Length: 404
Image (cartoon, rainbow, N blue to C red):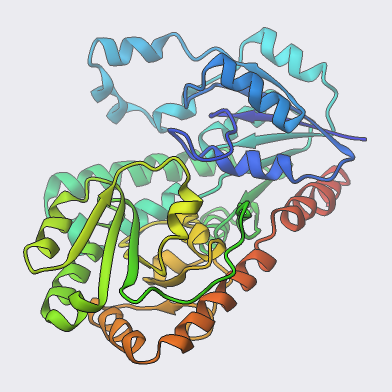
């Protein structure tokens, strides 16, 4: 029996709840039976005690809640967050374990200490001589590096300074927490490559992000008479510019497009984009929350993913594939997903290209229905959670324990 102790910023949850908390849940729930997990969580996503008990039951683990630092509430209460500018690292990197917690974790005698969240990577220093895996899952330094190359995010000196400082902090943190006895696990190939480039001594690896398999697998891929589009997520820095460009291109296409398609915005802050389309005769619906996300996706035919900037793997894009939607997305939306442009999905760089694809879908619907089916089969196979979890916890963990 292999024993793994997870130390996590957030409590693992089946779906992301107030943080990126689904990845460790998926990896644990699909892990081989001969692995036993114990979880220590700072509960940054504020999961209630009753829900934690349910998660323990679902995963077959015990979850111990760690105390958050005493200074955290005072920073907010006294409005002292501006002090972060003087810190070498991001704020969350200053989370630490009490002597009691360290002793408790050491007494677990686990084979591997597994840490989720790159801000907590420094906790590996609390367990010298042990083998560690840190699941990032993204390289935040690369995120800010990308932002600093984008026109929309560098339009003012204040933004340039803010993102430059953030880049420096994460760059320092990643450099200082890098050690030869730690394996850094990413769900983004570009993230792993970037991390290894700025930290040549690091051991950074990429594994595909596991996908959550829907309870009901979509089998009917026939598009609706009025083809249903969906854009999911938030209208924020990650999607704002690409969305604005897409909406402008859709409006320029004329009534032919609006009469053949309807669109749902699934998430928050979409009212401005929606109103632009509604004013030109589009059938538009906004849903900020749905009880069954998978079922809601399957009401649609196509997901457009206008991601302007980002890192790692985009979970909502994976969900679209898994639920049988044809995916049309930007390069950042589709990176790290096992889909081939023109075969199982479409990648567009300019909004006008996406509109041309929509026009062609109107003429050759059957071709694109078949593509949606191929996309689902490919992603469910190559992003299978059981396969990825076994690879991480069997093959890779064993190599870590052997000092490979």
